Length: 309
Image (cartoon, rainbow, N blue to C red; front, side, top):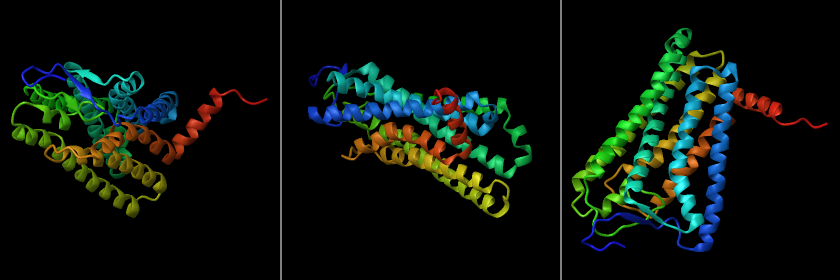
């Protein structure tokens, strides 16, 4: 551990447990979750790419969400799994900052892409005859690029504030990855104002977007219930899946970032849900609740797997 007068060059991650037996169990559990995340999201990506009938705006956005889910899970999972298997729990200052950057890049991209998916459903329900004209390929690509740029802008602001802080005391992070709430508490300066800036750029923005999306989906569901006759069940199922995914992404994030940074014992569990479980569940929810996707996946599985003789 660094002493109080030296600049911190690395941090010690305490992880989820110090018990070797528990660490062994966790390594197997999280490795399984990570593999399922890759498998589920790769199935979505492959299915959408190889199936012409799924070359629509909704499935294009769904495939891009799967790409972000894989990326988001990898940012935290790879380092955590390496630490669990190798029993090394240190991370350099530069890698710590890089991990925070990519966590907020992918997390921000998810948030903005969920906004885009809500807009897509709104246009599909309220402008069905002009839907394919409005949501053409160029617009879809632009919206996905905009989601990534939004995540980049959000993340670079966070990092720009964070790298100005001096770290010269304790270098122990009571977490399994580097994130702002824990790291900012180790700074050798008063961070109250900076914490408020961070909260406004993360938690409050997340909360505002969440309630706007809830209002938007309420309006969409009312429209489906009152006016849509053909394909009503499919439209309701699609919106329900998107609302479930939105809640899984927003609610844990609001719990972590929507307050001046006080570290609670439950933060680690919420972080596991937010960074590891949610990217896995997203693919399951969309696949299981979408009849067209389930049918297409089964058809592809039958083609890929050798038939019994």
